[in-house]
Amino acid sequence: MQEHEQVDELDPAQRADQASKQILRRLLGTIEANVEGARQNRDSEYLHDLRVATRRTRSALSQIKGVFPEATVTDFKARFAWLQQVTGPVRDLDVYLLDFPTLRQRLPTSLQPDLEPLYQLLLAQHAEAQQQLALDLASPRFEQLLDDWRAFLDAPVDLARAPAEAPPTQAALPIKQVADQRIRTLLRRVRAEGQAISEASPPEDLHELRKSGKKLRYLMEFFQSLYAKQRMREQIKQTKRLLDNLGRFQDTAVQARHLRETADASGGEARLPAATLLAMGALIGQLLQDQARARDGFAEVFAGFDSAKNATRFKALLAADPTPRRKRARKR
Image 1 (cartoon, rainbow, N blue to C red):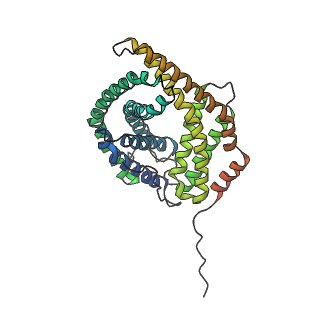
Image 2 (image 1 turned 180 degrees about the horizontal axis):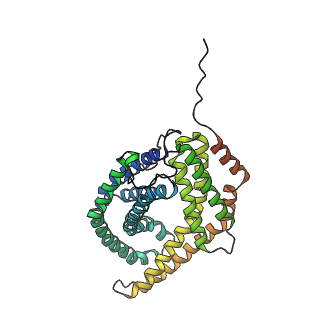
Image 3 (image 1 turned 135 degrees about the vertical axis):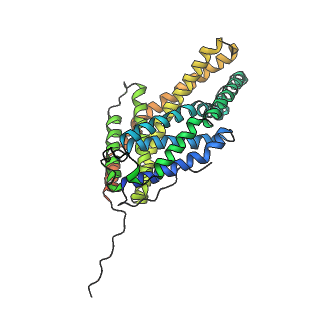
């Protein structure tokens, strides 16, 4: 396992394409460091770190715009989307199994043993999904993806595109200029999406806001070395508060939906006892209550993010120059 929140030390005047490759090269190292552990299922954290690095890679390709050739971006976004897709089933079941003891304890003591058949079903599903994941992570398709991505990242920036292609519009701009622009753009999007949410908004609107909030957080983490350290940490922390609320809303909805789908499918080969289905129903009720509490708390959490005070902090963050000013040479 490898820490996936390392800080890339960037030069504010560095070319945007060079700085972006530096960020992406480090994320590739995280993917490569966790492949074998995920393939062999040594620990769930290997797959978690691999998926986080993959998700951040896709976010960087989508959000650091105008830096790489569009055809290259489109190609690799699709290929990393495939990697995110094939690693999803095992990760979902990992989370479910890790949470299962806590979920079981939420039921009355008399009902807790009735969930055991569900637990055994999840273990069997995990084993099957892990077998498929091991094949995918050893496949020529995956190996080719890593080889092609490494070759692109290691190529000099002037050789990263075909001669006939026009140069990307922001490739040679200072990375600080690009970072300021992209963070401001995502910040406006998060505020607009959050302000549009009312009590009547469907869950899909909160899910879209969560995705936008994650993109903003990733950008701030990618570029945090370009800004005043403490100010950036405060803004990342504030954004995480919003994401925590949205995450609780989404995660409880996913768990409740999975329980309902499992119950609906229990008439097949993996038939569950009636007592287990009743216990699952009680658990679904509790999860839906958790989701409602998270939804009720959203307005207050978003108000903190959207406050004038937080807007002032963002403005100060993006306006500040963290680079030490050079002393003027004394005239002799």
